[in-house]
Image (cartoon, rainbow, N blue to C red):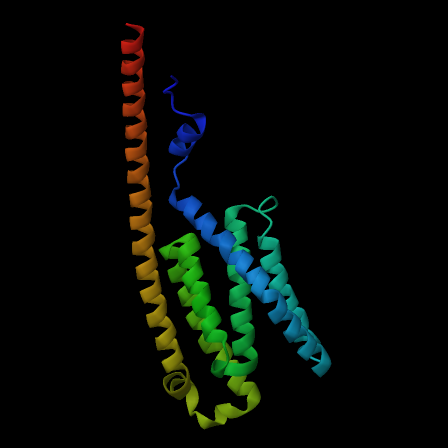
Length: 222
């Protein structure tokens, strides 16, 4: 009777599911969801913008969607490049919304999504940097929106603008971002540790099984 471990089992034991592999899994599933769900959403937006004559907006959302599609091509881009393109698409859409519609738009939600996925894909340090960029963009672009729309006259200076208009959204984005970064960092670190420990146990079990097989074969020959 053959007691040897099959090559498939040994290959699975020698190929641990490390943190980079987990992040790659998250990236690919995220991009596929964005690609499938975003197609009808972008189609509707394009039709509305083209009918209304907003050709710039139509071109912008088309570009953002193309960034997601390009990110789905692993043969042409490394993991870091794919992640950067996907996060850039989220950030650009959020900036576009705040730039043209102010803080009442979905721009803050897209900014938070950028922070959340940057932590999941690239780590806490990158996510903290993205948070700082998102907060500055939120204030700067919303200020520009009010200045162009003529609503800036309601605020006496930059201090009043930041305190009365921008501060609530900035604080909300900052608090949610820090909470998400802390939770995801802790979760990913513990998950990576658990996976590595599991792989160590699997290798030990495989080694002991092979030793047992050798003893059984030696007994059978005797």
